[in-house]
Image (tube, rainbow, N blue to C red; front, side, top):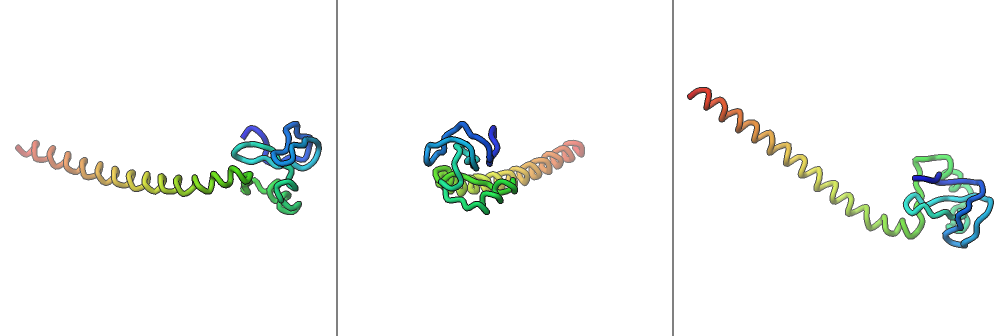
Length: 110
């Protein structure tokens, strides 16, 4: 991300909800990077402090959260298929190597 997720100084961007700028507490969506006043998106002061202090917490605006909730199951499905295919390829390669070694042994014996 090019901007920090939370800030308490003047933001030149306008709030994605109220369209006002100025000094105060702000939070940026980690996907679209639009800035919001925590109050405008219903984030209580205690929750804002946690989001500001704990970088392992993630925050997405409502629009991005909605898209993300549809995207995550697809990502999980693709990941599961990829793991299956990697496992299958590994098994197939092991079998092919074994077959090649058997053929080499037979050729040496003849």
